[in-house]
Image (cartoon, rainbow, N blue to C red; front, side):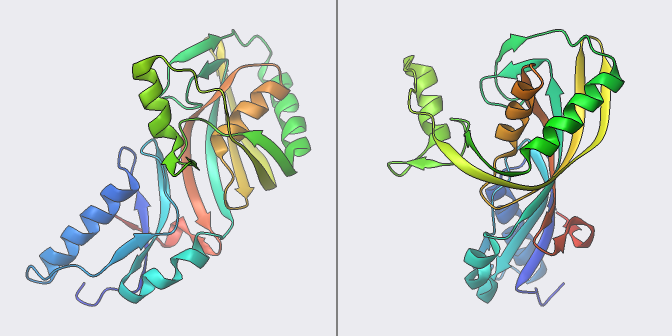
Length: 229
């Protein structure tokens, strides 16, 4: 395309950082404009490398809208691994607790559905120290990775009020001593799905961690209208 819109909807693949997406789009713009320098670009909310899905990209004048867009509600489809807890709250971290899941699928399904319903509303939860939340201007994940090298223990765990509008159990798989719950979450901006996954585990008396995450909506913007990178 020659004339780029001010707002792009991109389906971020697994494995890329949010900045990787911007970098590839800049290169794509230059390639399609005979080497012309790409206009200013930014995004309305990061996605971790282990997450995929909808990213809103502002191009040129569109970057002026990003501060408003980042505040929009979000929808995610998450796979929560039940029976394991990691240092990071997702599959990137080291497993620190493992418990065999013994319940039948029907019983587990009922427990999860009940607890998801009880989580709807505003709840205050700890945020992973591997998150992008800043403390004294430094992202927590940078402090956490530095602490890994030095052996320091981070004692001050940040907490956040998180607002959940909907939490729908889509599927439960159980086998080999663990279970995977696929859940659709509709949440306010600033809600950490890793924290919700761990909280769900606590409520059903199992360790839990986020196995997979896909962002499907930001406000009225839908992944169905996005383009591949």
